[in-house]
Length: 239
Image: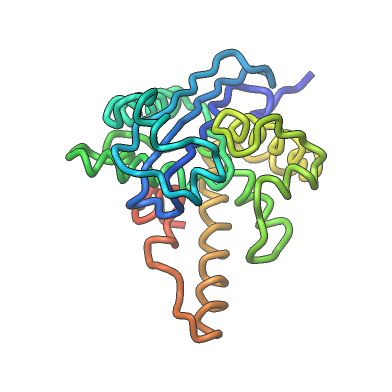
């Protein structure tokens, strides 16, 4: 039987955080879940000490309180170092990182590295590959907004056993991707490196339309760094 990248190794990745600003907010938990041939072979999930208060709104979503995160969480520098190390190891091995709206999570890790005076992910040698079910779904649905992991899971009959938990969301992102390639088989004809470039093009097309959408309503455009993917404000490639 012919195998494709969906049957190979993958690293699912997700963060729960203090808020929606990927540059200034910080992780409160992370999950790294390694897959081989559709099976989970290893999971690493930890709380992270955010070294600041977790807003009530964020805590209501993921259920992690400031007190718990500060008492039980890894020091921020250790957590970011571990996540960045796993991402770099995957890149060196050609293993795709999978996650829903990965630009958010990757940008946050990149920003945290820089805040610690370290090189960012790309400067450190990270170059993908990346597979983002949100970018893929957004392209095929051909609409600008309304893409939440819970909704896309429902569309593909994927059960997320632990929604808004980093491990649950990371695993669900892979399960959604597995269903997407059943519907859009031509994705599997594209190699992983090219898939990263193609998703970057799709994101760029979305960004241009979203920018025009907001500008046309007098709301201003989107931030310039939002045009970059998979790390906002960083050039992995030029589409």
